[in-house]
Image (cartoon, rainbow, N blue to C red; front, side, top):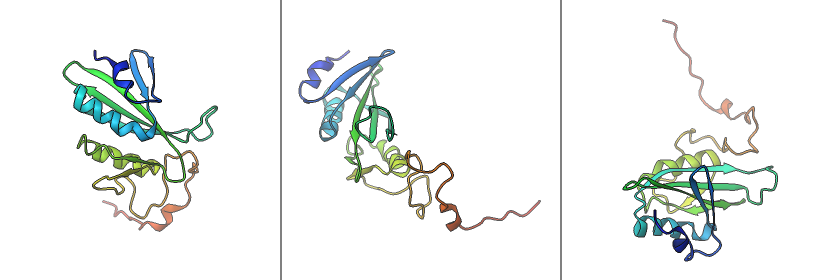
Length: 162
């Protein structure tokens, strides 16, 4: 195991917690990229296993709208760390991690497509799951369960019976 407290001393405002053997670090958004770079370059966290987001709209006691989560792994000894940071409207933006891990490309595009989080500096910042004509972000909590009628703009596909 590496010395997590020593690493975090370089990043003011970070907090840690542990639940069921998983260590989580919460870092201010302005320091998130620097912490991830330090973990990769100085502590050999060579795998970005996941990038995801949670919308905390209307959650009790939530002070921020979006919670970003990065799951990083040091494959030499299977040490895992969850790095979390928080973003808010109107323009939730965070630097891309594709400059650290190329595998972040599609994961960040998925978060952009579903939540509308902008990844500054991303090499291919466009939708990956929804059509280009789709203007909303379906995993945001303020997206209506029945949709907004976006489907009426898409071409109708008809199937011939066999």
